[in-house]
Length: 361
Length: 143
Image (cartoon, rainbow over the protein chains, first blue to last red):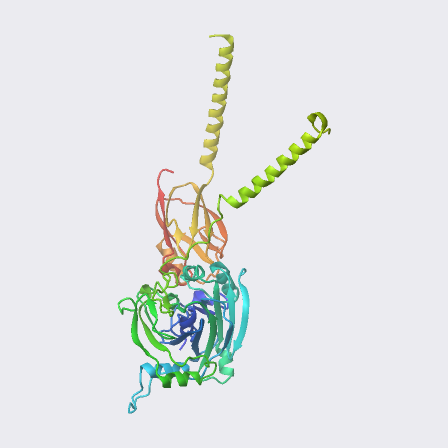
């Protein structure tokens, strides 16, 4: 049940509740929408956060990352939104498959056949480079710096929590691509969506390596608040992860195994999932920690080199662009050659005149 | 001392006296001007978060919000802050001790503190105080 809006907030205009979602895998996590988005940190006007656990899938094959996530409608009304950092410009944002997420959950958490108990439902400077409407979701892919995205979000009615400037900056330093999703609960109701129904979204992003934003999961949460999510990775070979999911750092490795033929076949048969290869490695990373622990993202090296990027993990800043050299030898030589040619020309003109007299003005 | 040397010495002395007079006048003028204190808001924190000002003298706070979200700067005692925690004003632009700084903008406000002591300045937008948008103004006696 939506919590009452504090008096102060009622005078703040038609705020749209917002969550800063994660790129790729985490993206799915944040776009799960309820009156408060699930597990992505969708923030209500009173700062409350819905703590539902969500599931995200990040597949990587042939240099392309596929993110599949779901927005769940949990009743209520009004508009909600999320902003998710992405590792690159997507080539497509489309309605996701019908059973990919459920099938992944089943693969790592087999359902007991005789379990009688029902399971829990589960700115000014920003450039809009893609807009897509999927069911009750209005999705916009944006390019811009932290301030640009913040202004765009504010202008479009999103209320950013106080940690948003730092979080946006954290992501924009590595990728200036964000995905904003506005979820219209009233439209969902009008469409006949029932509580618990979800809209899955499939985002296709060419990138050198998958990258799963995790810090965004803690957006708007105080240090001790729990953050939970399940992230599934499907890669050509066993990936190297940074940080390593030790369990004590807020992420835990729940599964790392060769993907079964039946799983791959089932995934491949879903909408938009024909890219799933014949063989693959399945990894499940459970996010189960406190907000203060999630100061990083999950860098994935799926190449087999075993060197996940500290920059992708948010543990190091990207190298600054090369500064213009103060001493450019090429330009200096060019300038000297022009001077030499000029001097030779003057010398020739002077020597060609009788008596070597200077030119008359 | 030759006449030439006397002339030079007189000139030097005259220039020195003139400069001293000008500087003195300037110092007197400055003591009447507001004390200017810049405060930057970055990543939802005040920088600096602690300032010291003399009692009875006008102080102009130049508050620059570098964040893409709005913030507030409200200075006062505990009772005032308690009222604002449950307040209903969406924007502050009437009282010099209570101002709203829109995203990526600068606001100036001049305040004269009447009594020595310590006051807090806080942003009372939802969640901002808990996130750390709190600072202190220490007012020293004897201006």
